[in-house]
Length: 500
Image: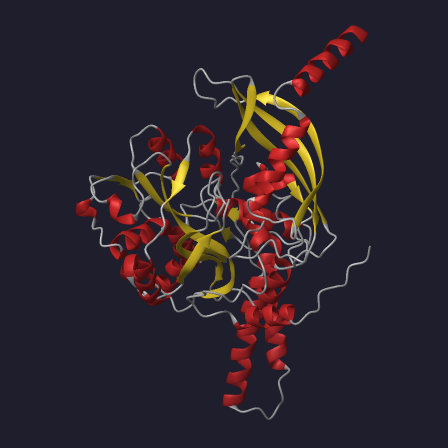
């Protein structure tokens, strides 16, 4: 046994000694941090190396190592790391090669000077001429998981008997009109109570997205948080935003995630949702986080602007996805009809990135919250570059597509992205119909925007970008009155003072 421990200790020591020296690692981590955050905002106060591993994605004949570390950062001035339009959680996680659970200390209400953030991060190093050169932060691929919905029952007969008793106790001199009004109000109350009792038993089915996708991870993180409050939120695996709107309209879901532009099309019955007609019951609970348009090419591609996509092989996303609809609008706004493209494919993001890597595609267009895990992971195998959208096209898109807005990828949102990149974004939204009571909506909003929700610990980077201040932005559809009331109450609630 002692011999085994001695051998194991030697292996660990050898693993820690491989690769760059500790001072080199500290210098490289500090340098990357400076690319997005000056010392006046964040300062590296401690870094400990935690070992190395061979990089499984290293190109043939190239020696690369993944170097793991723990870092402590001090917040030097008040900073909201969940802000939509400045470097924050997204840039920090990408720069440090961390997964969502690798970052702690983020306050969803905004961090104060003196706060400490801890990061379990990683950098990939390449050996060249006897030296170790930092390449990119390690990517992150979230685990795939499936969640199933459960059916529900009813207690309507018992409730009807109770309301029948209540109706018979109405004032004796009530006339037919008064009794009709009482009956209608009791029936409405009956439906509300019956629905709430059923939901207490069976939960609030939430239409999420494909397993392992951002919507699914956000939905599952929210479900974990609600379970601690005794609320069941079964997450439905779906094809994405358009499928979610359909499930919500059919009553197969009580809550749904979708894009703001797709929600606008649903409530007005336009575009790809024209055949279904308007959905007047659709209501917003909140805007959650931005979903920017990614136009991606290989870093060594000669393509520099949207006009360069003409005659090229382009992926626009899967049929039936809200992202695909936006991709088509992006091409149209840049005067790039599909007939001008050499090839149009309809792959999911992971498949499209693989095709781009293997030179089977020239570019892809995808709408997803940043940083997208698949894009970060792909950056380990080959360098990527974002194509900026043209300002004139952005103006047309915002005018033609309510629910969309101009946006910039903050510097270092992705590896090697030294400058901000202008694009279009839509808001990810939590939507509902008319099934939930005002009290239920208010409670959901309070829990959704509760301070220090463990979004990162529960696996959702995008959840850490939530803010009640942004919840009314870029709605595109009417907001539920109870949600608006709850949000205004949250915005008027003072931030608790922190003590050392």
